[in-house]
Length: 344
Ligand code: AMP
Ligand code: TRP
Image (cartoon, rainbow, N blue to C red; front, side, top):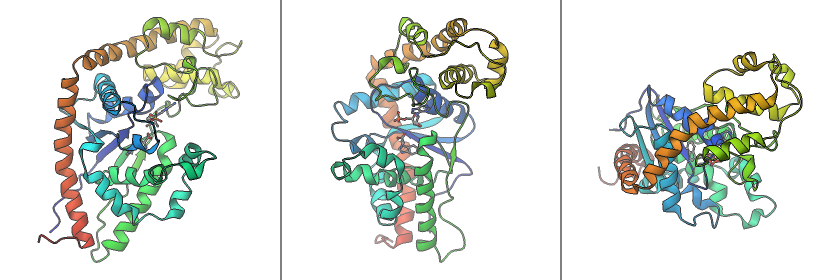
């Protein structure tokens, strides 16, 4: 008898503990998690094993994991409502990844654009882990039989692969029954913040790895730094228009309006209506105030938590215990379905 239950709607998402978190991570990922936990059964993971895919990415993995956990908790993830844990404390992730490595095809992985971008020209020098990382991501999601996965647009292709693996498992291993074991997980891509762009170049994504500090606002930036980064953000000499169509070819202007809309939980059209005809110097003042009002309570709480690391560790350990319980049930079922059930 299989024991694991598939809930009506279960959310799983992960974030890598690499480097400074910025407002792109907050608006594109973490903020959406907070809203989901009110209604759904949510599991969120700091995916430290994923951070191993790039050599030298782990100068202080424990501290980076605690810092990202602090950001997630400070932003509003409530450990009483959601499960929050770090991936390496739940060994079932890697065990399921092996099983899925034997289901996924090299051709499927060869299509992954993120691998091509990250490996660059030196493909032979990339780790096997970087190549097979979407398989571990599929294991992360399916280990909890998650049905919905909030992600940024850049992760959509990995979710397609997860669906291919789930569907292949259903047909190749579970065909004796007329019900599928895995429901195919769906992406949740929310709000105007799908892609927050660099403050210096409206055509490239705001990113931790951009060498220009002025290209992003970090969650640890103080108010003076935020003011000065927004003041120096690239714009153009035209006023704010009435309609979104008039922002075509004005990528930097659109990006700042998008950031405003995301922080204020309004649509881009509402913001255009509010500021139409005004110049960017006035808009930038309001935008800085809005960002500071939203980010500074998070920064304050992150600092508090980073001075009380035991508090964060306790939350992660409790989360791991809860995650392991579900993971163990699902993996036991998967092993039974494959035929690895030597105990009963
Ligand atoms: P990364 O910083 O690439 O590890 O991404 C962590 C999470 O933040 C993922 O869910 C990304 O999709 C999201 N994310 C990263 N950068 C941005 C951005 N510039 N705009 C929106 N979401 C982002
Ligand atoms: N690959 C994701 C990223 O780089 C992080 C991630 C790992 C993830 N496992 C996941 C996201 C499972 C959603 C679900 O951002």
